[in-house]
Length: 267
Image (cartoon, rainbow, N blue to C red; front, side):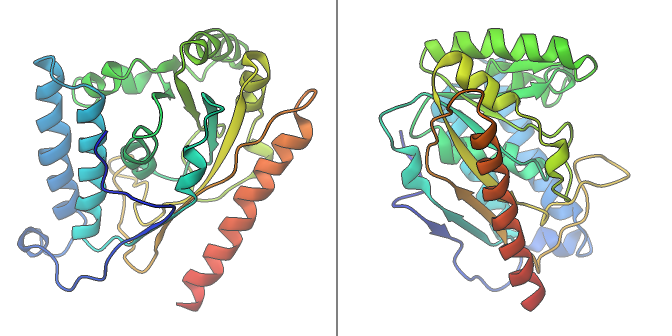
């Protein structure tokens, strides 16, 4: 499967100047978001409706999303991609959830190495704009109203997909947030991995370049001073009830976020 990435790491090249549409939108965030919605959402929504949106198209649209962000000043630093090349998959991939950005770009990083889908909020699969693309990836949809029902859904459907060789990306936080709170980072991913007898891969994300927003959720301010960090950890084999492994994932994410925050402040 074609990919713009090679090797274990990737860093955005330093580019000068912003596209004309940035100035057309008076230097606001809406130049980037307009481009993303036009060139990714609406374009590939049509591909879904026409029945042409396969996994290769998913990877292509995801990597094009990353390139759009770069064109508007986003600088990616991605590490640990070799950890996705293991032969002991499928995996439960567990990550913190900071913005809409990771949902857009992670498929382009992970899917070239393995079949994968997401655990998502059901509402994301029901919309007439994003819903077509999301439904086409056959995600595990949860309501986030009744935790017990969500647990049962993820364990049942997740185990079925893992047995078919499909890895699962799960964000244990209940919602996107720029602040990582370990007490709100549940152990659902570990529970699923233990039930299915598979390993987990942690991913630490710092994607607050792309803000959450108050007017339109998911489309907030752009912070060009902040680098976009993605680090993929080594596979972990849960033992027993997975308590120690869950803490290992939390510590991995927290340590990376602390380091990246210091780098942003120093810069």
